[in-house]
Image 1: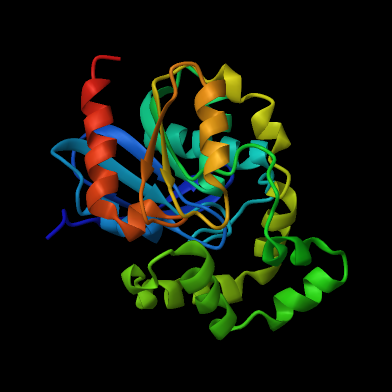
Image 2: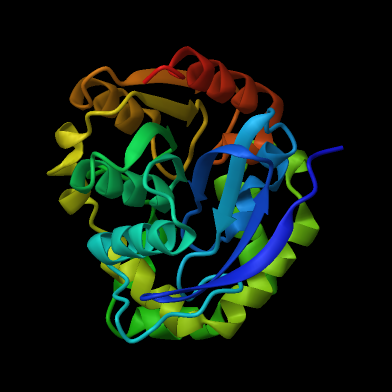
Length: 275
């Protein structure tokens, strides 16, 4: 049984941000990826140790959040929305964990506002240029992409998680994925804009070496979306970056193998608690 989470909505300059919060102590913001929400971290939150205040927001125009006119779905725009949320919560300094697109956003935050981020955890982070799978390239086409997004139904959405996100689909929470689809279906235009705006991770790669805080890089060995080679390159580029690989795991180790992911994450956090 995990720690009970409270849900709330916080007003920020970049939108009304829905979030879940649990525990007390050092604040940890956990940033999800594309087509997802803060629910990505449900299983990981069940392993949160004492002394950690876990905050899992839905990014603007994702999940239960809305975006303001000030928000732009770019790497910098998402990073500013994270800082805006931290400011609205009164967090001067915090730990940051980002998954997939959320990893690239977290790198941007840590590199741009280094005094704000205490420790950084990157999970299968979209961060450096790599060969995007065909399913990810087709929606980038000007006309074809819009047609595909209008046709993208529940079955295709579930199939994407079963066959692309997870290596062992038996570990997938189908009910969670269906909730993600319902949120996606209500915000298709915003989802397509986000995909197109963040399809090129070069802006993240250009600043990644500016990350100066202790950094854990966690990767699924069988990631079919963002190859392990990206994680190895990140380890070389981030000063003091430390790569850990979870075997027989896909793009979302925090969901597919939360026991092992949490063991690695909290060991790293404990070792770096004096930073």
